[in-house]
Image 1 (cartoon, rainbow, N blue to C red):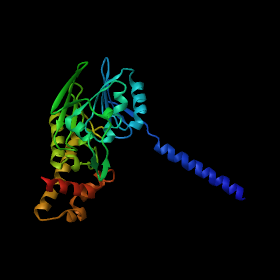
Image 2: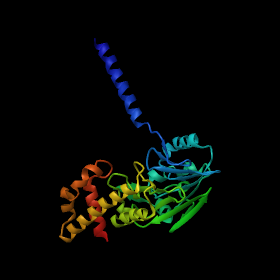
Image 3: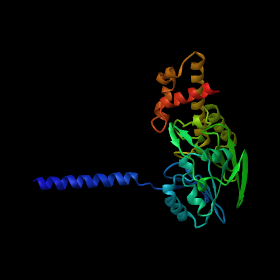
Image 4: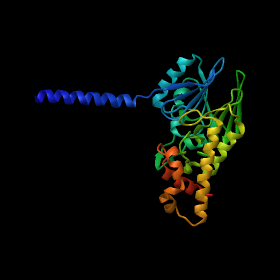
Length: 296
């Protein structure tokens, strides 16, 4: 009887271990937007790829540990080499795989603040991030905007000031009417605004409004995380951000402190169900907006 119990316990343990390993298994899932533009979901920020007649243009690289899976996923779509890689900002879930693609011949570029941030010790949400190795760093940097012209596609890479960080860039496929916003858009959820690294609520809203000026009803918007969105969805998102900011700004005018804002669930309770419950909580959102407005 004891032996049978031991066997049953062993079987349960093996099943549990298998279940855990399956949950941890990362898959790179492609989403086709046009004949030559895809979004890849996996571990970290959404990747964008554009396939020209000779090469692949790539947006962000997720983490190094999934680079081989990303490369394999792209090879299932095209056998063309990855020649260009742009980082939308410096966080590791968007730049961690840089060296893997640089080793394969990709030219990496970004806003100048991305390279600067990656070269120094940084703090993100209380966690210290060590400088990146030289082979992780972008090779070409820009200060404002830059254009690429590949196989009939005009690609505008445009810096937005102090939004998610101080080095964010939008990537606008002008011919195909697709915009990759990086982490200046967390589709359907409260955003992470990295105040320690140049982010701000006003810059975040301004970034989204810039996309709304460029977009029309047929534009496909790739967010830094989660799913493809439309102009109308982004417009609703901006309204939420603006409302939250204005409510907290009014509370600050009334003399409310950070502690008051942190405890006052009513401020954004009407948005908690839809936009909370993921990476950033309603409480953290209130505190972030308060700190951002106080810094100005």
